[in-house]
Image (cartoon, rainbow, N blue to C red; front, side, top):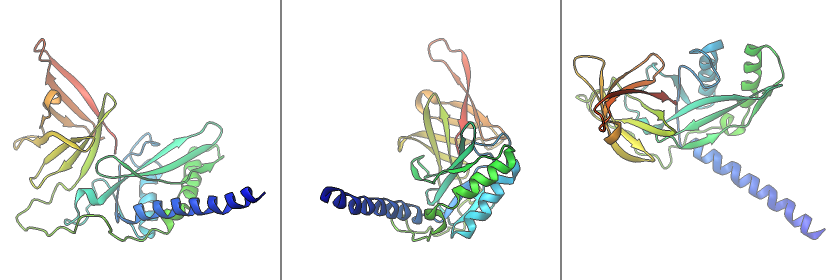
Amino acid sequence: MNQVKTFIPLLFISLFSLTAFSQNKLDQYKYVSIPKQLSLQKSPNQYQINSILRDYLNKYDFVSFIQGENYPDDVKPCEILSLNADKSGFLSTKTVLTFTDCYGNNVYTSIEGVSRTKEFKLAYYEALRETLKDPNIQNHKYTGQNLTAQKTVDKNEPTSAKASFILEFKNTKYTFVETAVKDEYNVLVNQESIGTLKKESNNDQYILEAGPMSGTGNFDDFGNFTLTRVNPVNNIKITDIMARVN
């Protein structure tokens, strides 16, 4: 009996510590980027979910925006969390929100929201409303701790391409983080730089210089990257799709 009495307070202390730690990680970020199309959607902003998530997060001390919308020029890519929403369930609709950093690391995963409504639109609304009741989201207070200092804007520095994003190819995630040069990105795998992506000056074509992944390509309307490269064995051109993750 004494062991049980001792275990219960320890359990509550452990749960409290875990919650506080998760809250602290989320509080380090102020900005949230929402993709035009989430994992649970079949088309961009389906059922206006993206707009609804943006408005809700802005109520909870975040500054959130849908990709393509304007945001402050002095914000660095790694000061922005990428949001995604996933769906599961057969007899019910279950949703969770995930927040990832610019390297693709999971910073926070929300509680699960559940709806048993059969109509898809209403089910999404109900499940996401429950998900957004997550106390670490509702009690978010930006502290800025452990993040880099705010950037001083150089008037001569290009500011039109402020973004970071992740592409996936054959189960490997490639993180693209902007540099100080317009339309140029560092390419990272597991937080290590493997090359660069640069846009050609006279068209929408990009040049990827990243070892065996080197080639040229362009983005489609959903952010996927079509990469054309040459097989070094037979000198035949091959084309692959790097899928947009966030």
